[in-house]
Image (cartoon, rainbow, N blue to C red):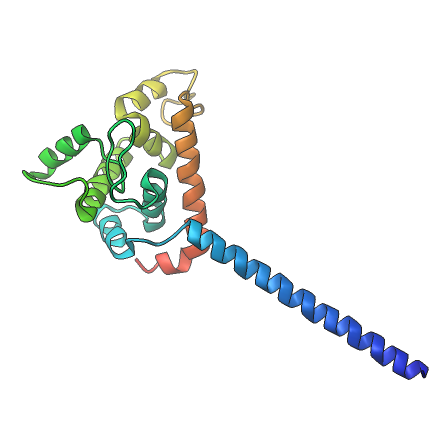
Length: 194
């Protein structure tokens, strides 16, 4: 075999290996993206976009809340009795209904639950500094978070939480923030249209 043939054969092998590696890398990125999109779906997209716009909430954030609260199960019921996509407690639902002037409502109804949940998130966001504090209030209660903010052990400035003392709430806030980050990464341009 001539030196030229050996060089050509070597070149073809290297080129073939590079092509195979390129496609393997491309397919692995595609597969990871596909798996992530299954873990962070866009279920109830129209309804979520509508209530997000109505209450001035970032659409990706509303998806993050619904994913964290119920995993997109409209019939979810927590151990504590919170129901639906955004896990509204019956007492909170009654409070929201009174504020909105609604006499009859069903917290298992997708549109009602999303509307009440977005209304309540907006209400809390007007009372607290940022997403972390609002998420903590959504999970642990407005009064609880106001108490934490008054405690120097949990908040140096009385506005932002430095420490979230309830493990469940700290985990919840972390999940909201992580889900928001993922939704923005996976669907940023798509969700920006809303």
